[in-house]
Image: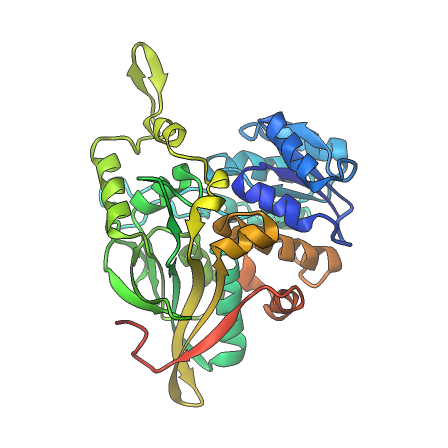
Length: 408
């Protein structure tokens, strides 16, 4: 397989390094707007012949198309901020190649009732183009990170093997991960963090359909495994909720994230004074996007691995019936910050998001996952995916929970 990797930031670097040397990978072109950054990643891999570098303007679909055609790639792997997602998506389609990303197209809140009614949902722009991809016999595998991505593989596995009737599918992300020495820092893109945390979170119920809530709504203390214990989680806008009901049968689908009271407070302040805005304002006669100012001031997540301690857990809590009896499980992936730095030289969240597209690329290269159109992980058989995790020694586990006892 020949791959054009668009973006070699925190997660893009992880994808490049984790896929290097895999027998299914013939070449991975490392493309970024910062050519020096792409060169540094290529040098760290040590095989510049199989990892040529190129400059790319991810906001320009024609630029993406030209690069994909010039290098004769089979797949465009999108690892840039979601605000540049659609040009890369369209560039891959124009180049007549397959496509993968770890997020989906951005949402637009309802114009009059943002905290109750749904506007443009996450992924709507991409799923609206399903027929165009199917007509070309090409696959756009969207939202293939850890969450979205692996969390949906867990949901598909539970639906296939562990339940006769699924009631709730609840994605929960948390743990005891900390960033030492910084008053305010994020484990992934601050631009994306602000977007998903301050947008109206999405919920799906079979009887009601999709609806939204205020940011940080319905706090709960979910009991995380492996000795972590109860951690408060709140509703956050996330792709999983928009995608899972398209394929899997459930009564309710939610996503909640353990952000922490201090972090939520900081986000509320940014929103209150308008620093989360993406529309330009005038400062000393120059147009400035407030969110870009915040992004320029906080530390680059790719550089924070040595300052991170603790564990990151992403998992899927499923309730329902098996053999006529209530059942609850939590399938999850956990990584330790110091372990990922020691073993891979990557910060934990970058590693968690990065290994999943590498697994999916192998499944596509080997033909274990096949399809055409715009699809996400729950559309495919989860078994070969989890088999690769087992083969490669990537932690994942499923625990039984006494019904009704998942929360403290």
